Length: 89
Image 1 (tube, rainbow, N blue to C red):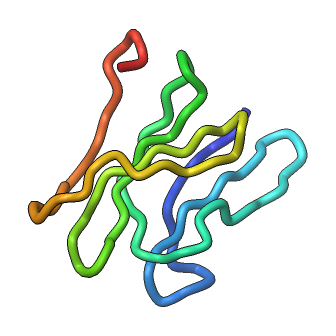
Image 2 (spheres, rainbow, N blue to C red):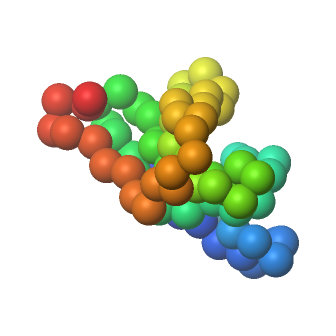
């Protein structure tokens, strides 16, 4: 019942948001800008997304249950998009 998306409605660069279809509540869940390409996985209740770190797009995961963010990559190559396998990997 939730939609995860990126928007620049509150900042110049896009942030990660969640919209609850039942309560109609909108929350910004990333405190930094430069987020894009969110992909939600119902199997593990996580959102993978790309975020700009020092001008390089890196991969992150947001745990929707624990409400925590974790950086997955930290190298020189920019990542363009992210997706989940059907089993949640």
